[in-house]
Amino acid sequence: MEHEPKRHYASRLWGIVGASLVIASLIAMPFSVPSGFAGLLLGIVLLFSQLVTRVKPSELAADIPGELTEVWGSLRWMASRRELSMRTHPELRDLLEEIAESRRTTLIALRSGAWKDRARTPEGAQTIRDIEVVLQTALYDSVFIGRHLFRGKGQRDSTFRSRCADPAFGRDALAAVGEIRDEVRALCESALAAGELSDLRVNLIQKRFQALVEAERELEAETTIDAFD
Image (cartoon, rainbow, N blue to C red; front, side, top):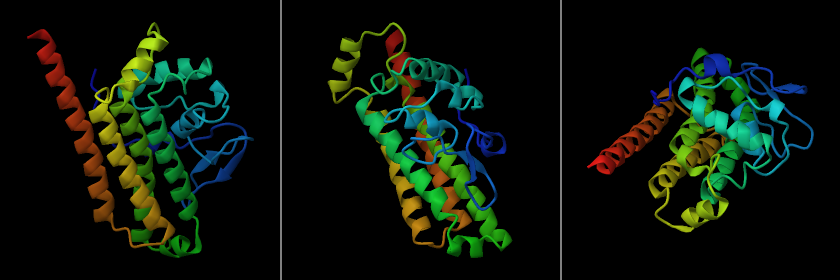
């Protein structure tokens, strides 16, 4: 299976999720606000919200990149059983929640007066669109990198807990997701301050995410080769 995340997520991800809709950004991308949710989140963020709140499986996004089909199916199965939180590595769960929260805060910031003024120019509007793509990419790349840190079907809870207690288990993946968290957090802080976010900066973040994904793939390939030596 080809796992490299594609970079055209935004063209097909933003849709109606759930029953209650509001305008989430300056380019009229909708997101759902189901009652009782901790945050105003879209698509895959609904899945991560279930780590700390109750979300109906029917409200989970179904339109995802092909390379995540397998892991997404597993996550939906966990979600349907209300076991997603207990089946996720604690550190990964915290990181995903932080990324989701920073994404939510950034989307809200993009609706501020300063960003509305900037959106009146072609360059400003494009920067906002690029930021939204980066935010969604961050979530997908984080799930891809951390895909081995979920307890799937047939795995014993005690064994999984023991593995999670081992600092070496998932260390590289957690570090990579942590870097994504830091990038998204910095992006959020800049958005809140209505800072100048150039296309160059956004592109650099996207390239950094891609480098982290490629590094994870190379590490997995090396591990597979060693296993057969």
